[in-house]
Image (cartoon, rainbow, N blue to C red):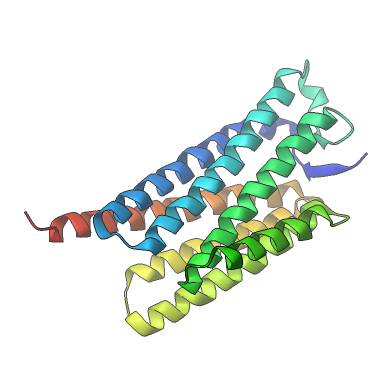
Length: 228
């Protein structure tokens, strides 16, 4: 039997709830980012909103598919892992959609860092990212490695931005993406230790919460400085 993640029985239902929570949080991030775009008309903020909307779709799709799997489970003893041999179609569908949307969201964030407007560049970046995952033998491990690689690039660019601008709000964004990076690293260990899967969720929750707080602060600043 091949496992996606090793999950304790008691956590399976909570895991689905957390996926829905992550979907809700990332949708809020997307909404607030778009609201800032409407106030500032900065193209980068619009792309930031689009990237988190894609991440929202990734969590939503996985939560919905896992809910279908759980609804077809009769006893708690049946829930020992995400088993590919059971509910294979829905499991693969949910997993692939989740990975595709999540990587698309991260690549959109990376594209935002370049501060260019070239659809061909975005097409190549997105195409290569998806090809790397779906042509890999172990798609889950490759997905986590690629996610970590993209997140390190995003963190590096935000650090550079902070060094140049000295904007203290950027520090919160850097910390948030570091938490996302650590979350991705923990998911990579979840094939062996379910505790890593739990820690990954906690780190992700902290990261998205920090991003929301940063956006709320930015919205208040724009509204305060907006002409009457």
